[in-house]
Image 1: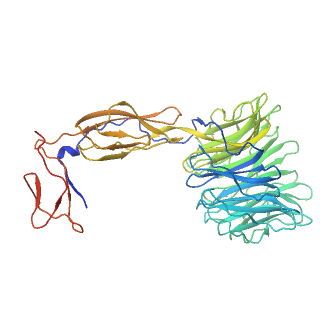
Image 2: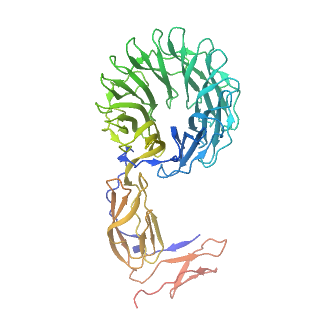
Image 3: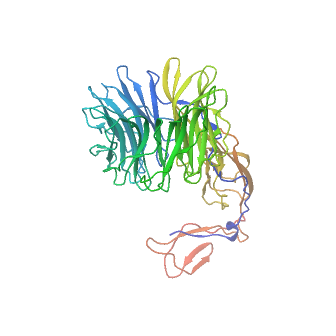
Length: 575
């Protein structure tokens, strides 16, 4: 143990601290310049992205290798500023399609896709336990012999996985499921979730916080397409009898499913009302045992399509879709703050006069929402985004993300635990299609407390911190640091003060997004006390504590009755 005997003046110092208010929300202040994450040698498409609890991003997509289509991946550990060299996940020699990706709470990423085996498509998977740096060899999840396609995957709170897909059994398309309890190393024997009396397609799956699995899909009833759902409460071993969610009499399509923090479920789909498509939702508060009567979200009179839904950390649900207004399609949103019982009136978030397509939606842990879509201008499809920080009541003006002069397609968005939004999409330019990414920029906010006062000729170190996306850097923008101290770009204030006095200086944290964050400090480095005493640092012998009493004689510390190592002497400050 080290004992420091300091003069009273060494414990005093004046502090002035301003402009330090932590951000209450992480709404983007802008968007980064798009970055290519696939190579430009051949076409890439169908991107998907997931983000781990440590904010690591992994994207997957398909890309031609010149002979076949393969699944590739890339990862980023700096919020999407830089991405790793793409890796092949699927084996060469046959086409692989429709990759999907999920990440478990233990940060294991698992990708699934459909790959042709020479006779039929089968569902395969691969997993990464090191943030996408390496991946396991692909393994078959579905059984060979009949085509299996459109796989989806979700991860549970206990790190188990469940995948669902459509498989032809020789006469009908059925929805099948398989689960993994070991991070995708092995998978259970597939089980049928839908019946095989009629064709079922377009499966989706979600896993609630209590590990209940819920799958939804579209099924032919013999006269119409209806939306059905089934749940599993035993990690996917058995599934409930399918329940009809949409009403009979008109076709329903493109189901989506999402689970809230309280384990309630919300399903969304589009249904024809006889002339137009209407976006509808239904909720379940008992793990899928029963479902509410469907609620219309979009207004009648114009077809609504491509609905998506997300649930924020506060349990509010927000849906986004496209609705025709007679001349173009507009991106619209609606939010429910009462568990899906009632929904707000639809709000337009894309500009009138431009066709919007393929909307997606994500929410941060602080409940900030971002919707993204691409819109058709006079000649290009431009990626746009809008955000809301008040549960979808108001939305920001749409901001362009992709560059003019190229076409975008297939945007996907995720929100990280630190509040960062990342979007990936396919971009066509010059006849070649590449995968690009961009992240939401957030202006800096200094979050550290005021630095303590330094002591003369005593080593000093204090770490300043700031939030912001991209990561802010620090600099002294005005004033003078205490003599002997320096400030590094990452915010470390350190050194050994060599002169007494009062020093006022301003620190600026910047990341290229305005406004910069500033903080002004006044630190006093005290002079020696009138007796000329300087701080002493005394170390007891190894294995012993420092005994008392102490006696100071002639500037040397004496200890009665025991030996003591003196590491600093007293001296007269006046020469």
